[in-house]
Length: 254
Image (tube, rainbow, N blue to C red):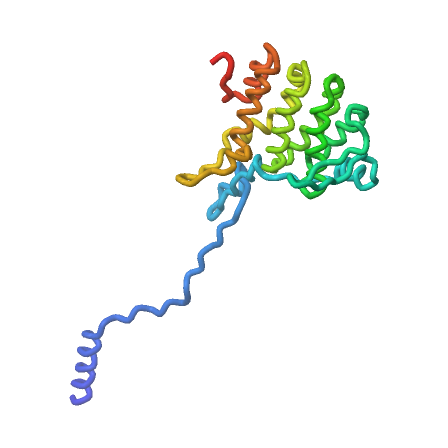
């Protein structure tokens, strides 16, 4: 009897005890998402993440290649030297600029527009401006030879190189008669990069944008260059500019 009473008491105590939950076997492992290309069978599977499209890189700078201008300069084939005065550096020409062979030298100097290190970029830029000031009738026949160097410089997508090239283009158009009209057939090679960077202006907020005083604001320089093209390019200039740069508005018709 005593044993039966003890057993009954044990059952009553067990009845009032809370049920114990089973111990977890371990943390549940989450399946790692698998990266896959879009529009594939793998992309439709569970735990699959579609890889986004690659970056277009329209504004990304391109790498520079060795220029013919640097090679000729290092060989000493240019009749130039660096001269210092109170206003800074300038080119000392060893021959009269008017007597230079423009078919040979002008394309080489334009090839140097891709240079970004001193003294190459200085000699190329200043040499071009000097030759354009003294070229006269020698400039127009050389225009076809200048297109590829201009295109190469713009295609670098380097902001400094683009600004320098735009200033050179403005000087080129105004350097001699009919040069602006001669450039119209080559707009398809020159203007695509300008269309990409046309709306890129520096937003300085309430501050002062000193680049405007230095004419280094790329968006403003492109607008200014397109207007020069239209003014000096003849009657077909605007329609060809509009075809390549759809957002351009005429500075003459308006």
